[in-house]
Amino acid sequence: MNSSATPGASPTPTRGSEPDGRRDQHSRLSLADRRWNPGRPRKVHAGGAPDTSPTKSAADSASPSELITPRLLNLRAAANYLGVSPWTIRDLEAKRILKRVTVPLPGGTELRKLLFDKVELDRLIEAWKT
Image 1 (cartoon, helix red, strand yellow):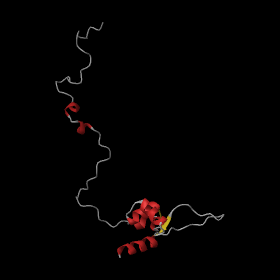
Image 2 (spheres, one colour):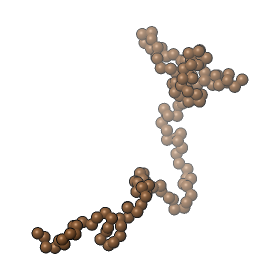
Image 3 (cartoon, one colour):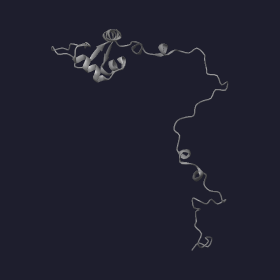
Image 4 (cartoon, one colour):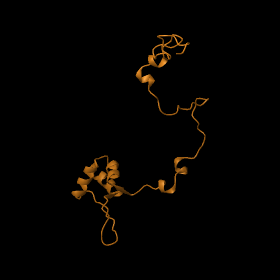
């Protein structure tokens, strides 16, 4: 038997009592305070004012393919463009109010993807205005 051990004393302190008599600081914190906050803290500039030095704009740093806006929009993009549901676009196309662009494929078939011309969408907006 170990002679340095005191009978009845536990070898490690319990969570509620620390050797110096203080409680663990985490037990005093609320659940929200104990949660880990992901991400890096924001950098604070010494001057307090944001950096306004001339830098490359988004257009300068973008690749040429990112600068070109597509003229043909798929179903979801056309719905977002008009601010309506994709089902509304399908209904307008089924009733022949909105014309669909068909892309011919080799073998006499055509692309099944629903594509809509921005010019046609703009024409529809103008018709709705009056």
